Amino acid sequence: LDVGDSWIIDINQLRDNEKRMVFFSVLSDVSYILEEKKSGSKQIGIYGDRYPIETFPSRVAIFVDELNKFAPSTRSIFSPIKSFLVDIAARGRSIGLSLIGAEQFASQIDDEVLGNASTYLIGKTDDVELSEKFYRKLSEGLRERVANLRTGQLVLIHEAMRVPVIIKYPRPLHRVEE
Image (cartoon, rainbow, N blue to C red; front, top):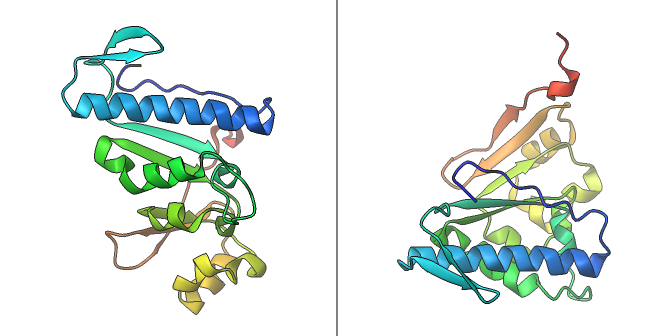
């Protein structure tokens, strides 16, 4: 893995327990490498082999769709990697690991994982979801605005900004006319 490289690991065809296993394996290996690199190690041992880590990036972003499958909000749903995700959400940035999760319903993600996020993007959301605990921190006016966002609009909330900002993302390239 070199700086600027993108890897896509498609786990869509796997069963749920296999998805959790692959996701946990990738996340734990990357966090281990980043911790070792930060501590000044030049080589790392993984699965019995030694690898140089000088060229491994100092910052890695891992994107995960349907984050609630790995860190569900309810205590009744068992997720063997949930505590690991809570730990990564809490201290990942300090080792150079950013976890970027996507979910249609933020209320289905564990409170500790959500609480450790520094940036939120919220798209058009229905009133039932907007009544959930996560959205109560939004003003009533902003909740109303979220319910009426147009296609391509998102509300950006970041801890460094004093107020939420409505942004518009570009049209997907496959829909751009020549």
